[in-house]
Length: 123
Image (tube, rainbow, N blue to C red):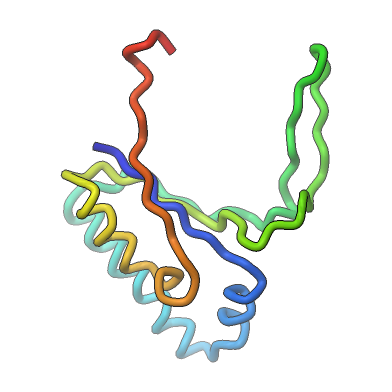
């Protein structure tokens, strides 16, 4: 089963990273190192990526056949999606265990969601 681990950030968590010394940052990033090591060993990582800040994105809307791209930032939000891992593991508990290794789980939050296979409905 595939699960998406969503990593969220906000101004406060960004500030925490920026206030850390190089040594503290390296220690906190150890969660990423351990997660990647485990996923690489098990072969359960499908992909992962960090995302650029919302100010670097565009919102895309199609109205009456016309495509509009609007520069960020968008509506005020407390949290923004900062990165993700897509894992293919045995069960939800395994995905939660992986998510708990992320530093943001300790000072922000992460979310785990199962994916839905839409191939059976012709999509």
